Amino acid sequence: SIKQAIEARHGFYQMLAINMGTLAGMAKGDTAYDEATASRAAANIEALTHYDLPSLFIEGSAAGTAEDSAAKPEIWADMDGFKAKFSGLQEAATGAAEAVKGGADNVGPVVGKLGAACKACHDSFRQKS
Ligand code: ASC
Image (cartoon, rainbow, N blue to C red; front, side, top):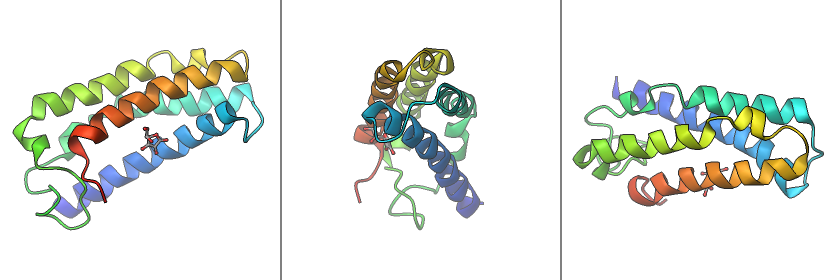
């Protein structure tokens, strides 16, 4: 159903955000660097980007049409562009679990790359609250 697809999207983004938060905390020095924790968070993000998220953006689930959706109608007007943004996140995540190993200084660049991919999609396709 539309409700289920929207809830699944939100769950997906929550999982992304939790793992991004783990990495961002270490990059900023708010939390102590721990290689295994960092690598596991990055591996989770890599794994998430192999889920076919765009398939959850079913017809009728845009903001303004469906409840609790922040998905701009532009997604359906440009599904290829939307999918390309998600591919951008997948590319940014590739190798992240290895890249964050070796010290806190290695986490920042990964967070920067991932965050830029998040933002690129939000700028075009997420309704501002
Ligand atoms: C995060 C998060 C986002 C992105 C975005 C990047 O950690 O929750 O939505 O990064 O802020 O610009």
